[in-house]
Structures are given as structure tokens and as C-alpha cells.
Length: 112
Image: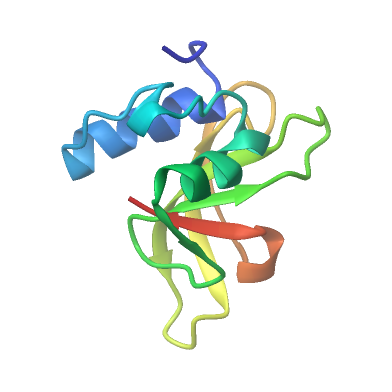
């Protein structure tokens, strides 16, 4: 239920593939939609959300060049918990990529 080749569709695929959760654009009765809505949808549906990154969590921020936010899949977290390596799509020029950033580069971590 997400647009193809977007950060949200990539992360939804990871949730379905890795966590075996039937995650859709209308998960738990909430419309997840654009990435900037994911934090509110998580809260409204009772999904755990906090500032602590963990492998397999969704990294979310409302900040992006498009104004629609961004989500990424947390691939790993540094031993000291200050850096996250994320997998993502459409961060730069419509392609898959990974990068390691400060955990504060994302506003929230959603734990499905």
C-alpha cells in the first residue's frame, strides 16, 4: 500500500520480510503514509517509540529535503549506542544505500 521505490515502501518490506509482521499502510488501524506520519501512527497504534536505536528498529525523522520525512531500517548500532548504521531507499537519488550516522540524526526509533 506504499508507493514503489520510496523509503516507506523499503522499510515496510523489511518489516514484512525480517520481522514477519503483516505491516501495511494501514497497520493497526492507523494510516502510516509518508515518513513524517510514522511517529504519530506508532504512538496512536500502541507501537513502542523512543530515542533508543536497536537493530531491526525503524529510524524516523520529520526532517527531509522533501518535507515528507524519512524512515530507514536500523542495520546495527555501535557498542556505545551513539552511532547507527541504517539501510534505506531514496535518501539520495532514488537508490538503495547504507550509511552510519549519529543516533540523533533521527528523531525517533520505532520498535515493531
